Amino acid sequence: TVLTSFLGSEDRIRTYTDGTKNRCPTIRRSGSRAKIVPFGHTRDMSCGSRVEALAAVLRDAGADAFFATSPVAMGYLQGLFESGHERMLTLAVSREGECALICPALTANQAARAGIPDIRPWKDGEDPMMLVQELAGEWGIRNAAIDDEMLAMHALGMQTALSEVRFMRGG
Image 1 (tube, rainbow, N blue to C red):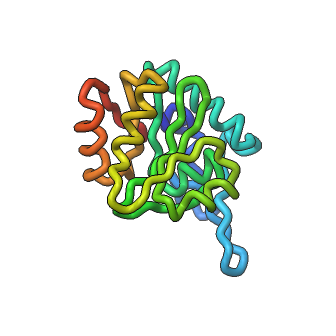
Image 2: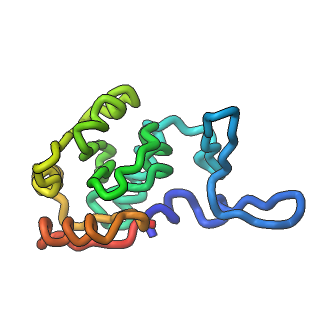
Image 3: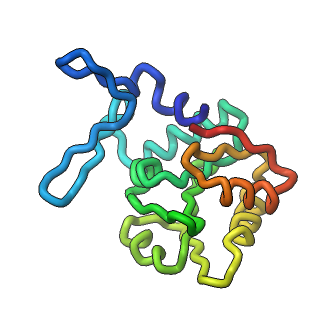
């Protein structure tokens, strides 16, 4: 998948002193705050360089964009650790390294504080898939990778809204 290529399969496995292995990023807690500690070759990368590295993987995979819905993926790429639950919340990353967030209006301020430059909020009663269609047109998306944690209702909504786009598993 796109993310496996981005993170590297071996870099994603951390072996602990007791011999057990974990395929997830390390999460360190300090009081009520949690911090995700990146792993492997991405350990010392800034959000901008992580996006650029992902854009290169997208180009190599033949994908025009990656749509992340996982709070871990969005946080790792742009510093927004938020879940949309049943509401469409996705961070799109283009093969050129552009980022756009399609989010409920209530999330827009938090996204701005995280430094996301292109925020496309939608309000209750509006169809977020219209924003997805608009973005796909602007970026010329023909092939898109979606993250494995995207809810089926959103993935199917994207497939309906973007019927000419070929979707692939993004990891």
